[in-house]
Image (cartoon, rainbow, N blue to C red; front, side, top):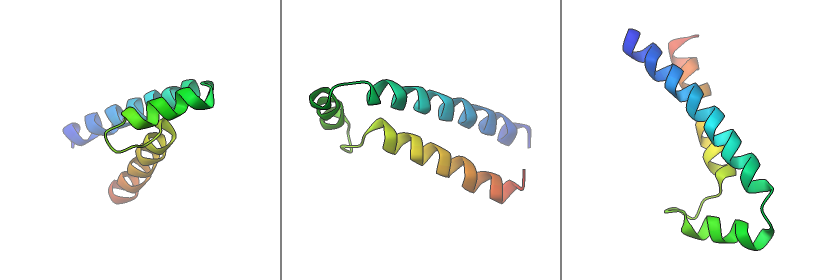
Length: 66
């Protein structure tokens, strides 16, 4: 379980990081946001990454009942 707790800790850090990335992205002009999205391997915005991180976190916590 210690390894899982470590993973959960790292996932929380990832959530914070993706939230900060999303905030920085939202401050970009629209044409720069498009450049960032187009450079993404899946054509996703940092907002999408943040949503995925939060969903992953929520789903995992439901499973481990934290």
